[in-house]
Length: 224
Image (cartoon, rainbow, N blue to C red; front, side, top):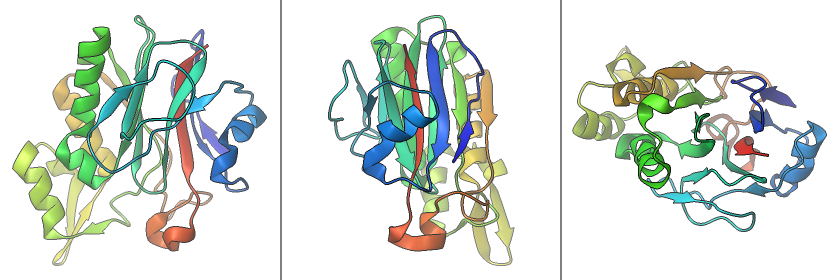
């Protein structure tokens, strides 16, 4: 069980990136309790899109790929197994968001949609946010087709150029570098990238490496 907490001890903020290799997905709240986080959890029904929703209470999550909240007493989270988990926090307004970002969602604008939702719903501007990108597949293991590069280029131009490498005729994409480029371009001043590549780093679940039978990582944030 591996945990990363990018912002240390912020009063009232509970957050982290958690791998639970020994637990089933239905036991996340039990897993959280094991690491001392005893709050109910809301997870969206993820569909690799750009929909962002606010969560105001614990319970079944909506179909979305990002959840935001400033209501204390529960956590919002996403589960991943190579896709990126991205946490956004505005400490002054006590706002959090958890974003699920695979290549489709990132290329389509889920990160920008999450930031716009935080602005429209809570007044949180990109300059007020801190972002943390959790363990995800890296360029060393993520070979992609031309359609992926075309999708990014069509919406963002060359903004994610540092995330792309070539090995002969093959394209490789580092999703987390792409996300960092997009977040910084949007005006987020603090972007942390945590953990190794999920496909070749030990102790992480990876859909590309293990297929549909693999488990998931949990990323979460909320205010007590």
